Image 1 (tube, rainbow, N blue to C red):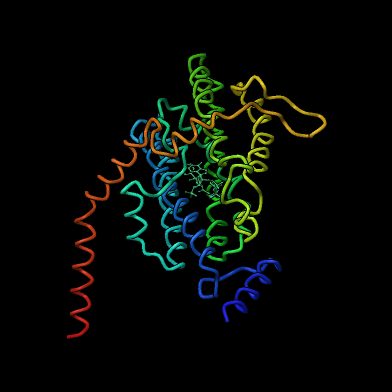
Image 2 (cartoon, rainbow, N blue to C red):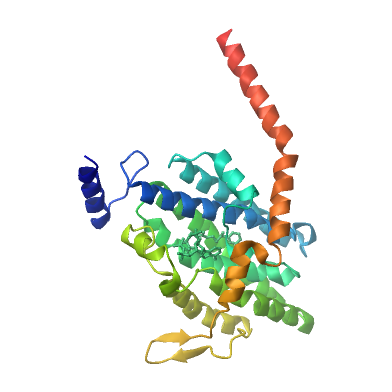
Length: 311
Ligand code: FAQ
């Protein structure tokens, strides 16, 4: 019987149809989706911290309002994605436990510090830029609830990217010290942004199967290349230098060549030893503990309500 279900599932994947929550699916497909969607959700939630750090110090009321909206969007994306993961039969509590205990992965990029206001702009420009590049193909991934969630997330992400670019453009039109601040932030965030796309295709254990299942539509290396190609002209408009002496246009390939990524740094961060891993987790654990009274109150209220309805 399973073989018949499997054949039908394969045929639907091959036909480009979407799989829905109540459809039969192979256990490994379910597991892979839970892994990827929950890591994505954790990334959004932890991703609120580096920029959240600057809300109280934004340089103007306008920038503060924009940043508040952006960080709130990220919280929304996280909740959206947890809900998408829950359709696969995992509970929110299990996912939260996995994040807070340090078992679950989240994007390497959020383990770097935000040292100046320019970092906030660069996160919008480069980090959201990379996130969009990776997420546009996910709008067409084979799992319906994930694909549909990504449509709205990508729209908001595109506002995030533009606000970052706009903030940097304003600084580049400012004083010499401001321009230096932007360049310094670009120097620190460029390589970590390229690492967001994950290991090279040849070193990516999950890619083959995820491409076969239509979860990934474009590979890690192809997306990274598309990101570099799109970003170089933007750097020219801004007037910043990307910190890679090997970055140059390759006429034959029709793409920019770029230097070697420091994969030791990448794995070090992924394995919990980046500059901010300990701090980020501690902040999330504290937020969870500080919120205990809210959860208790909500449960008490729900119980009271239910008892009243019965009476
Ligand atoms: N960091 O075999 P692959 C955002 C892990 S955007 C940490 O290639 P896969 C928006 C990977 O999990 C950021 N770990 O894996 C925002 C796997 O480990 P596992 C979030 C990484 O899944 C912007 C192992 O390495 N976006 O939050 C990373 O096929 C600004 C081998 O790798 C998403 O999550 C990394 N960079 O491809 C918020 C997008 N790369 O699980 C705030 C959805 C790889 O086997 C501010 N996810 N690993 O133990 C994906 O598209 C994929 O999961 C990839 C990785 C492409 C990230």
